[in-house]
Length: 636
Ligand code: ADP
Ligand code: ZN
Image (tube, rainbow, N blue to C red; front, side):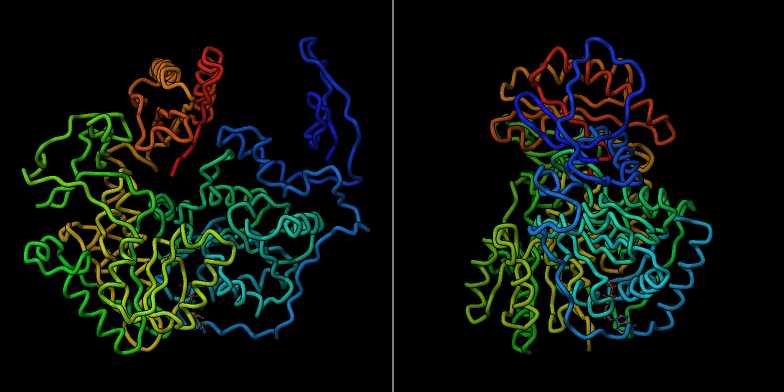
């Protein structure tokens, strides 16, 4: 129940976790609760169990989880759960016509039966279906059965995929039973959804990450769509939880089933499916047998060498774009600028210099005149030539804005929209851009990874990736997996109806295996290669990573604390501990940042390991009181 408590000179809303029966030590000073705020509980016991699991697993305080779970209004003392409150926001009513659900085709029907069968013995099933195979239609059939049995269903999607394309479709089928819950929903409405969830009724909650923290009862099914999406992991602030893991735990606690759906599974998920921990069901054909897009690689090295380039556009790309636009169809240009870390790249072999210990590209630190590894802290002087082939090294990188200028220059007649973090700051901007492009009010859509998320555009004739190299060269052991996922998802935007879609990928690394796999739509090959590397270089799922971040305004203080923590941890965990790592962005808002990483064998006692990590953090914390130390378990 919510209670009002004194905290210092303030009064705060808190939640009663449990009652004390043991005597309280003298050192602890107790104060009285001012008053109880509700007649009935504000949190159900099942929810508390999940919050506790999150706090334990992700090494944070249960209060952090509570703050993430409760809408701000519920944390206000004037809010009341009981009826007759004027300020309550009403859930929007659905006034359209209800539609029948589409009958499933043979492959979808088979997939559905296999899923139901797998659930007989397994709680979690992976639905691995190529883009546009109709995964959403399969979900809809499964949801309908659950609702008919009086169960609740949670349908998680990455925040960015919560467009009206999806919610409209679900509302047309399930009407008022659909409730949409994510960060762009007003706080008042979220509070009302939260309140209503305290009373069991069959309904479909469609939401982003935080919907997993809502109260549920009679939950029958959790769907995690695009399960490979990294936005399911909360980065900042705590709780740094993964909604997929939390969803699996939630379902387990409630006796519900889980369906993970994607065209490009996370390596960890596929590993679990192959090892029998999850069920595995595949769909290999697109709905109506529309062909998978034809992917062509363009060798930038050769294009630049022959000077057959317009800015960042190769001659063949410009030519294809002209043809497609002339035919009255649309073009999507993809350029990933987010998370771009400055790197050197060899002009001849296209490779950046890599870390000898970790097999990730080294990151350029201009001020320190060094290349550094973001995993182990390895540093070296900036080489004058490529260590692999002796070629010339250059700093690379350009973003969506620059691209927009070039498009204006080479395609002056085309109507252009740009979609990235800068153009979508306003609440409705993202939806507006998508709607305008879907209505064909624009010819070319330029975007970052935002354009790759499960959208359907009927008129798109060509999808082009201006440079696959940033994706391939991220300083991250997941770089190749991510590159494959992103490129496959972007490619999936081409060729929805009518004819085979076309995808052009420009690259300096035309021999890179990942691009071959994208070309051949061969997830299996990508997986086999990646899992072998994960095993060899001690990465998940064979090892768990715990990343410790230290922050302070004073660089000296943070370095000393990081060194002490690193030494202490090494005393316990030996070679499982990295050196002190200087991240690429080593100072944010005047806070200096250092990292220490731990890799722990998947089979080890992780609970005990976390306890030992927590003890060392406490030890360092008492000596460096003002340095902030943050643990991130399974960082993405
Ligand atoms: P995925 O989620 O696998 O990418 P979707 O479920 O979004 O694919 O389906 C792709 C397109 O095909 C959508 O426009 C969808 O409405 C249509 N579609 C898929 N299956 C059916 C079906 N059984 N009946 C009618 N339309 C379908
Ligand atoms: Zn390294």
